[in-house]
Image (cartoon, rainbow over all chains, first blue to last red; front, side, top):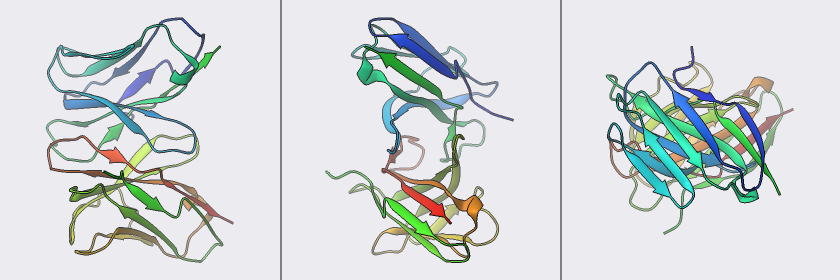
Length: 113
Length: 114
């Protein structure tokens, strides 16, 4: 069973469009991280959300942590080709309180010029 | 401040050989994690180490795989008698403290077993 489900799995859009990626679980997380991974490279940390209901902005990216800390979303405004990549959510589910990260299934985004 | 460094970036081994993957954490980071990404699959945790200690190896295959993080030098992930199913990208991550959950990843080592 997959602890963190992401949707959609694939997304192809035109430059300038908006999009939202979802990360859902039935488990509660102490925090969730969002990473972006490009082909042949390691995941790059984008943001960490900690508090239920928290919203964080990173330029055109808006991250939200669900009130119950079971889900998160990533919204990209006016997507650009440079946003292309694999987006991964990750976290450590409670009550295990372990440092190992569980990764989501991933959303592969392609932005066409 | 250099990021997490891994070498080699690409490693080719024949079945039965040994593979040694090295990871140098970010400066000031004493926690190292290894993850494996199989083709078309997600990242899976393998092992968590602090200097000279294995903290959590629940994701490590029971045989042929071992990891260490000595007092001096990089962390090493060692795979003995490699098989084709070991072909994957192996990523190392580091963090400065426990309970933080913010892990910074290296570029990975892509292992190909012929």
